[in-house]
Length: 388
Image (cartoon, rainbow, N blue to C red; front, side, top):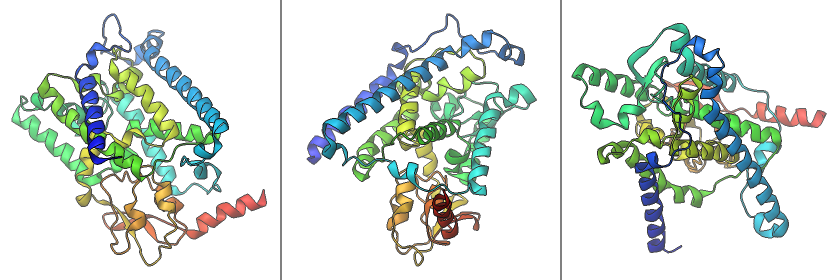
C-alpha cells in the first residue's frame, strides 16, 4: 500500500473513532429507567440483582453469536478457497502444542488475577475496606464505588476534573498512580487488570473448544499502531472537547454491573461485545490498543519487572515471538542486550513458558529471577504426549 493512501485510510479510521467516542452518548446499548449506583450485599442476594445483569447477559449472547458466525464464515472461506485461507497466520500451534505441567508462576498469576478482580468488584462491599483516594491504574471502572481502591482511569480521562480537586487529593492521586506504575509497570495489565482476566478466559475457552485463533503478523500490528495512539489522545483529551470517555470505555460494562449497579451503557456496551469476540480469536486483543496500558508502558524502562535474555543461549527458534500475545518481536530479534523489556510487555510469562532453552529467557523483579525458561519442562510435555 502506498504511504499516502495508508495515511489517508489511517486518518479516516482515527477520525471515525474520535467522532464515535465524542458522540458515544447518542448510541445507547442498554438504558435503565433510572440509574441506581447504590449497592449492598442484600441487593446482590436478591432477585433485583438479576435485572442489573441483563446488559451483561446481552453482551455475552451477542459476543457468542458473533463468534459462532465468524467461525462458520472462516470455515466457508476455507472450503471455497483453501489456498488463500491457508496463508492466513493462525494460532493453530498453541492448541496442538504438548501440554506442560502448569508452572508455579502461571498458577500464581491466575490466582492473583482472580482475587484482584473479585476484590475490585466486591471487596469494599464485603470487607468494608475502601481507600477512596488510593488509585491503582487498572480498568476496574470508577463507576463501581464499592471497590477496594479507586481506579486511576477516571481522573486520567477527566483531567479537567482532576485540576479542580484540593491539592492534597491531587498529590495523593498522582503519588499512588505513579508509585504503582513505577513499581509494577505493565505487569499491572498481566496480573491485576480485570479486563485482562476476561480476555484470558475467552482465550482459554477457544483453546478448550479447539477453534483456531488468529495470530497477527508484523504488518497487522503496524497497521493498528496509529489506532492505539489515537485511543491515547481520546482517553486524555476527550474531556476538554466536552466528551465523556466512560461512555466509550468497554470496562463500564463489567465492574459496576457485577457489583449490582443499574448502569446504562452506550457505545461502551457495543465495544465490550467486540472485546469478547476479539479476545476469543486473538489473545489480549484489546490490550494492543488499550490507552491506559499504553500510558503505563511509558514507564517500562524504570519498572522493577524486567524481561531478561541470555543471547548466547538463544537458538533463534522464534517460539517467544509466536507465543507473545502482544506481538513483541524484539525479544526474538535482540542479539546483544540482556534487557529485552518492551513498552508493550504485560509480563504474562508466555515467552518464558514457550522458550525451549535453559535460562535463555527469564522474568525478574528487582533484579531477582522469578521465572526462567526450561528445556526440561518443554520436553516433559512431549514425553507425556508420547505415553498417550
